[in-house]
Image (tube, rainbow, N blue to C red):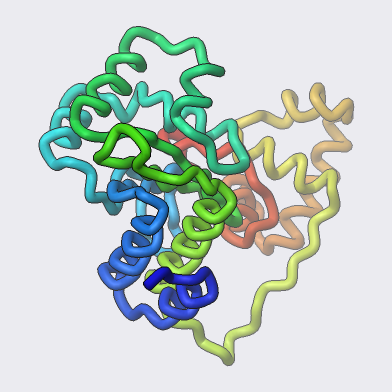
Length: 252
């Protein structure tokens, strides 16, 4: 019996473990022909205590994944690099047609196909100051799946929400929720701080004098209750007030 989206959401919301989430997810995408899945954290997820990494959850062939990491394909994988550029689910075929692939990237895709990963697609997953992605593939090469990308996008995004919910630390309902408002200029400056720019560089980019930059920094310090620029930027990221470019190899 086919699983409706409403049933999928209800079952996922009631899941009490990651294993249960994964089982429900695989059953559901299996209806569309996809039997292989990989879930990657493409940035640190400090809020739930998890670090960036490829294949946090997966049922890809074990020997392929071992070889994948031995060859450092996670540093070259075109699916990962393309995911950073996209807002919605895309197919590997689309990606291959639009990217000028390097020899090693082509090798990665070809060897993946030889390992039994066909008709691949990937869904970028974005949240406040965090980024992830889910890849799906089929064992069969032809007529194995329907490419209902809208439904796949919905399944993947709800999986991501439920995954984070299961990992979230217990909330104390008596603790006040921070209510910090930053102006557009303050957000620009803190984002640049998170990206490692100096006051001088920020002044040039924003066409501000040194006194102008310092004025905004003082207001930021007051709101963030600190006089440390790195701490202020980190706190703003954790609260979802700024969203600097996410990169798994650059961490603040």
